[in-house]
Length: 64
Picture: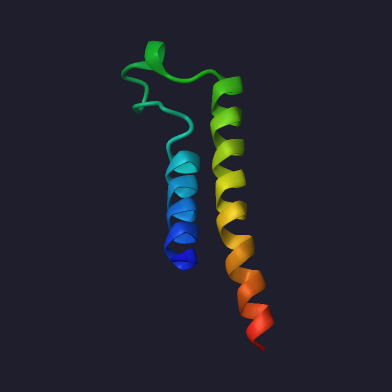
């Protein structure tokens, strides 16, 4: 169950980081995110990925 939750956190964080800019190749720049919104979304995404990665890394090191 822990692996499923951690994997979900990592995947959600990856999607947030990948879509943080919110632009569409210049065709709709009026709807794109500002720099502060982009950095906030990227920061939240990185935090989610780290929060999902740490428990998996710690549990792997305890098995050895």
